[in-house]
Structures are given as structure tokens and as C-alpha cells.
Image 1 (cartoon, rainbow, N blue to C red):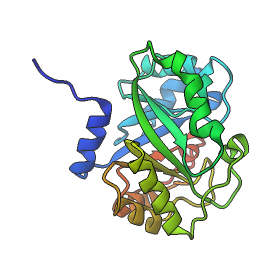
Image 2 (image 1 turned 30 degrees about the horizontal axis):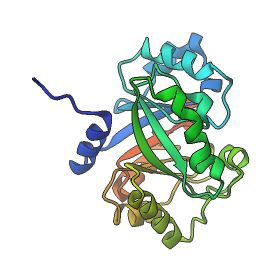
Image 3 (image 1 turned 135 degrees about the horizontal axis):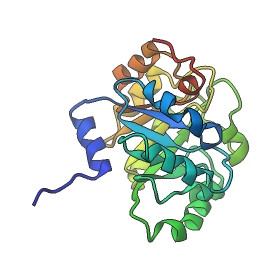
Image 4 (image 1 turned 180 degrees about the vertical axis):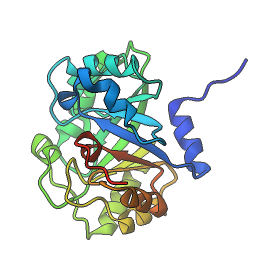
Length: 238
């Protein structure tokens, strides 16, 4: 009998082999089903995953979008939810996020507790993920919704220690993000410093608008890079 890898194991193996992964992030409230086929035909050639989520999403909208995506492409769909209402059993994976850069219990444990009844009887693969918001030069919707502040981009020691605290507390992935539409992405220095101490895969997103910035994140040690706003609005530069 062939043992099938979990999605987490696939990410872990890619990290060990230094195979870089790429995801496009879809905000359900901005997704247009009538343009979906054209949207997916324009996916970067090396796209390996699709993330779905937003800071605020209309109730039930995530399920509609995930079903539409699954009907059009075969890539794994990972939920990147802003709250417990954005959970869909039609997806493949739930990134079980804790906003460890903030100190608001609502996004450290309360939303997670509220989500349990929705996920306990699904086939979703649950991946505990430490989510770290880093200052990207503008106030983001994550800040507003979570009522937390991002970590100072110049305080690399604090960022590194926060990432390690996430790993030590059992997170299987660490996600560094500068927020949707950030003026600038997470710096190579930050990525390199965090990668050098982690034993788990590192995801990086926010503010990446060009292939050169994408490659810079990879070179610094990101295992999986997420492109969101720049791809949605067609401004991602080759």
C-alpha cells in the first residue's frame, strides 16, 4: 500500500530539498467567478498552492469561492482565514493561525476555539501556523480587524524570538507577512535571520510585486512565498 504524504509533509520535504513553493492568495470578497477561468490561466507557471482568505469576508462567501476554485484547478487549496467564519470543508487544508505577533487573545485562542465545531467533522488537514505581522509601511486591514500592531521591521531580534516562540509552542509553519498591499515586503535580512534559527518551513508574503522581489525572498530562505494584491490587480511585474 502506497502511503500518501500529507500536505504538511509535502511542504516539509520541499523545504528540506530546497524546492521553492509559490502560492497565490485569493480574497473571497474580491474574487469574480465569471472571470475565474481567465484568472487561473494567468497564474504564474510555478504556482504550487492557492491560499484563500481575507481580513473580513461575507458569511458563506469562502465556501462559494473554494468550490469554484476546486472546479477549475487541481492545485491544493489552503484556507488562510481572518476569522472562524471563513472555514470551508471544500478546501484541502486549514492553516490554523495564531497571530503571535499580537497580544489580543481573540486572535491567539478565541477564534480558534470558535472554529472547532466547524472543523472537527471535516476532512480538512489542520496545520498549526504561527502568523507574524511585520510593519510594511502602512496600516493594514489585519491591524484594524485584530486590533494589534505589527512588529517593528528594524527589531529583528524580536521577530526572530517571536518566530522561535511559535516553533517551541508547537507551530508547524511560521508565516511572516507585511500585510495586504504593503508598501514594502518583508526584508531579506528578516527572512534570513528567521530562517537561520527555524527547524520548520517558513512562509513569506505581503508587498511582493515583482519576480525580483520573489527571488530575493527565496534567496533569503523563504520556503513558500505568497503573492496576493499584486496578482489580483494585475500589477505583478516580470
